[in-house]
Image (cartoon, rainbow, N blue to C red):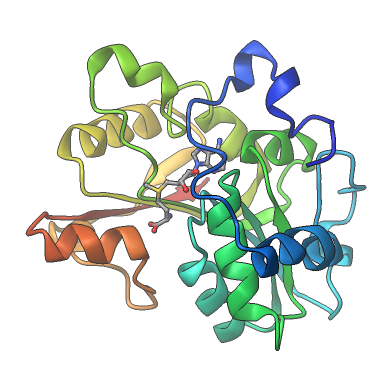
Length: 235
Ligand SMILES: C[S@@+](CC[C@H](N)C(=O)[O-])C[C@H]1O[C@@H](n2cnc3c(N)ncnc32)[C@H](O)[C@@H]1O
C-alpha cells in the first residue's frame, strides 16, 4: 500500500483505526489483483473529488458510497443493479478487497471505484452534498462501553456523513447488535440535518425493498440474531 493518508502509519487522532487491515496471507493471484487490478479502480484522499460523478468510466446521474464493504457482495450487486449510479466503496481490510476484485475481474462494473483504506479520509475529501446515498452496513459493533469511541457510526462521524449527503439523500445503516442500534438512533437523531424515516416498526425490522443481503447479515441471521435497518434522510 502506498504511503499516504490511507496508511496505518500516519493516522490523525480523529481517524485512529481499530479494525483489521490484514488477515490471512494473500495467494499470489490475489496479491496480483491488489498490485495490478486495484490501481485501475482506486481512488484515494488525494484524488480530485470536485466532480465525483466524473470519476467513473460511464456517465452517472448520482454517486453512492459504501463504508466497510467487507468482501463487497452488497457493493457489487448494487453497482450491477444500478449502472447509472457511480459507486465508491471503502474497505481497509485487504483480504476483503482482494475477494471483491477476484469476483469482478472478468467484468468489472464501469461505475465502481474503490478505496482500500479508511472511509473517513474519502468523506473528508468529498464536496458538500455530493452523495445521494451512503451505506454503513453492519459496522464493527465494538460492543464494550470502553470501545464505543471506535464506532464508525458516531456523534463524531455523523456530522461529516450529513455534510456530504445531498438534500433528500439517504443514509442507510444496519446492525445486529441491539445496543449499537440504540446508539445509532440516539446519535443520528441528535444531528439536525438527518431525519429518521421510520413510520412503523416494520420500517426498521424489515430491510428496505431494494435491499441486497450482506455477508455479515446472512451469518447473523443464520446464527439466529435479529437485524435492524435504519434509513435517515438528509433534510
Ligand atoms: C462487520 S464488517 C461488515 C462488512 C459488510 N458490510 C457486511 O455486512 O458483510 C465491518 C467492516 O467495516 C470495515 N471498516 C471498519 N472501519 C472502517 C472505516 N473507518 N472505513 C471503512 N471501512 C471500515 C471493516 O474493515 C469491516 O470489513
